[in-house]
Length: 99
Image (cartoon, rainbow, N blue to C red; front, side, top):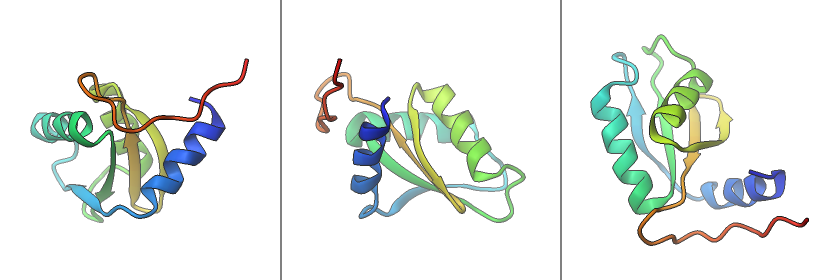
């Protein structure tokens, strides 16, 4: 993902609310499955990490991204944004990469 594409996604994520929370149990298989389904439906999601979690936002973001095949767009404070293009019906069109 290019920096221009990442910037585009960050601007889109600015207006959305966090739809999931990583709690004290960390990244569970159930959380991974729900995030996977949400990424397929929405493509761009924001997740917050609660204070009682042993993981930082960056660690949780990398863990969820690797387990769902997503890309980490942004990590700020206790929130992070993930993106993955939908396999069935893509909604978000990223800016083209210049060659």
